Image 1 (tube, rainbow, N blue to C red):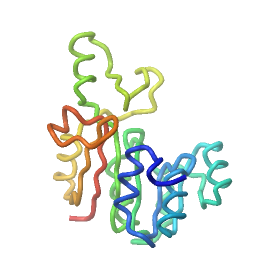
Image 2 (cartoon, rainbow, N blue to C red):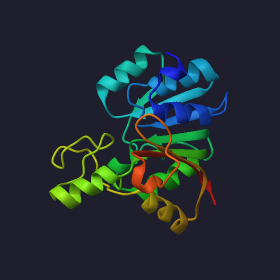
Image 3 (cartoon, rainbow, N blue to C red):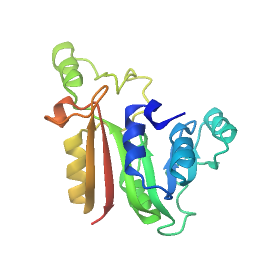
Image 4 (cartoon, helix red, strand yellow):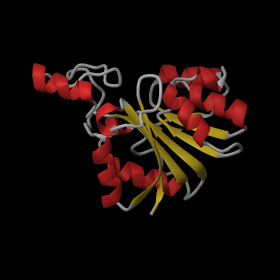
Length: 198
């Protein structure tokens, strides 16, 4: 698979990561991103994943993946053992956000966080006019079968970073097929942030 064939958030992350980097992906799924990073950017990659079928797919690709919970799986890693720690489409599913971000920044020099924007205009309109829990292309689940335990917007996350003294190096706001540059808290479906210690 080539980087151009990846979904938009993976392409953005692929472009951010420097060749030859050490990369840890928390919640790496079936390893599409890690595989392309390893094969096309000569990165040394490792993943953490809970889903057995996803782990099997990673192993078939020749990837090093550990079966662990990302909320407890980082304590074994020494400080600054990776150049990048990726937490893409997982943060809204964890209960200890502050702890995960802190641990990711301890283990990695930079942390790449990607998440859906719960304040997207379609989610707002659904709530206002239908009185129903938000659903968008980035949030496709019903309230009763969603894996998400956190509902937050781009503005919420930016404020979180200020409060916790986390430095935002870069922010990319994603629509369906391209980046969003106008009023991202309203029009972006997803976001990718690159973080480091303040």
